[in-house]
Amino acid sequence: MSRHPSLKWAQRSDKVFITIDLPDAQDVKLKLEPEGKFVFSATSGSDKIPYEVDLDLFDSVDVNESKASVGSRNICYLVKKLENKWWSRLIKQGGKPPVFLKVDWDKWVDEDEELDEKPGADMDFGDFDFSKMNMGNMGGADLDAAGYDENDDSDTEDENAEEASPADTKEEASTSVEADAKKA
Image (cartoon, rainbow, N blue to C red; front, side, top):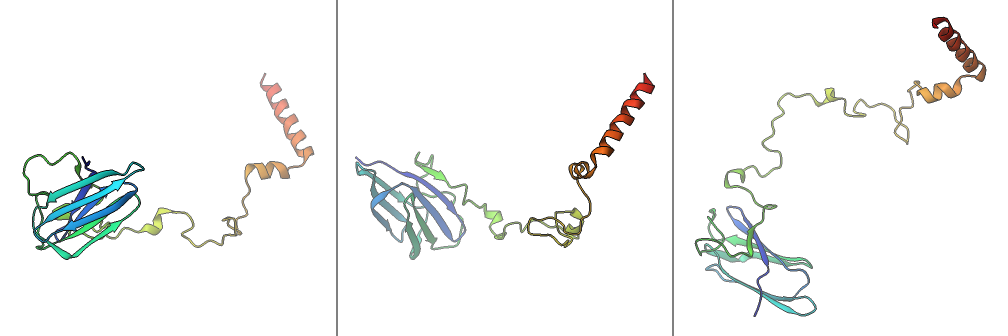
């Protein structure tokens, strides 16, 4: 008896994406008929366990424009719909879908969002000025190979402390001790 592999699907108005998750699939056989019959069979693993899927897709498809890709982790099938319309489900059978059939949320696009093909098409920044955001070296400062501004004369506190002479440090320390003694 054969098993059912995990099958994910998503759609656009003109095509359906079917992804069969079956690592190390061997002897892969795919059959797609114009009336929407989809048949898949393969073996997997060292025990050559047989897997099989037999589905009646929701509507007719264009077999000549459909494409399959067999990878090491999954089998992807791009099924071209005969008519450009949204299907209410993947298979003709009504009711609850089979347990091995799931929606591919990574590829899913809602019907009303399909027209916005470009990512970020709904983002309108209007007259927003990005130059005022202080995003790193947007001002064109001269940076050396390490990314530091060569014209920057400022020093860090550590560098200032190293440059101070030992005599200055003793003098400052004794002054602060005298100030503390006067307060007491």
